[in-house]
Length: 187
Image (cartoon, rainbow, N blue to C red; front, side, top):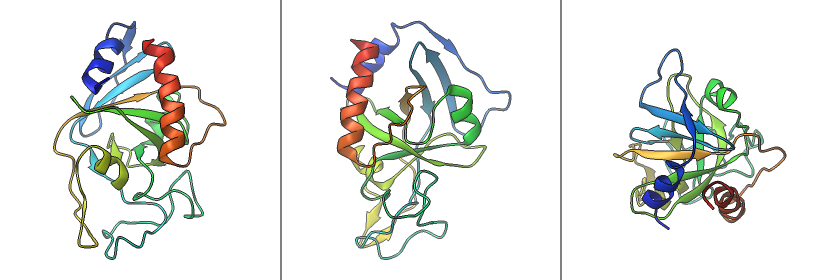
């Protein structure tokens, strides 16, 4: 099933619009339904935080070896784990916690399952790891150097509020849990 087909099924569900009092940059709108919601992200930015990886020799200047989900900097790697970044106020408003699984929808591509692994700037919605960008067909590392550039197109990130104690730490676990959560919503 393509991302567009998933989005079509989600649009048949009852949802209400969520509008923050001050709209952050790249805000494309948000809908919340029973057990799920989605936010449209205009031009997904890159987040390189997390455990260092030998395939990257030169990180961008704001790189940190830890994420909010993994303060030790030993488990979550931007290169190895597809993850998304949201501001803390947004996560709190829609009921998602660090470690929650999300589904990233991008046109005719297959859905990509990701982990909410880091808090980001208050005025910015939607950043994604190197692994997420790669899964969306966008390479951000060339010759061991980070190309700090955004995706260049809109995506929708589906989230599932109320996940407790589920903290997948790799792409396989995120895909298994994400597919289960998504199937509960779209059938």
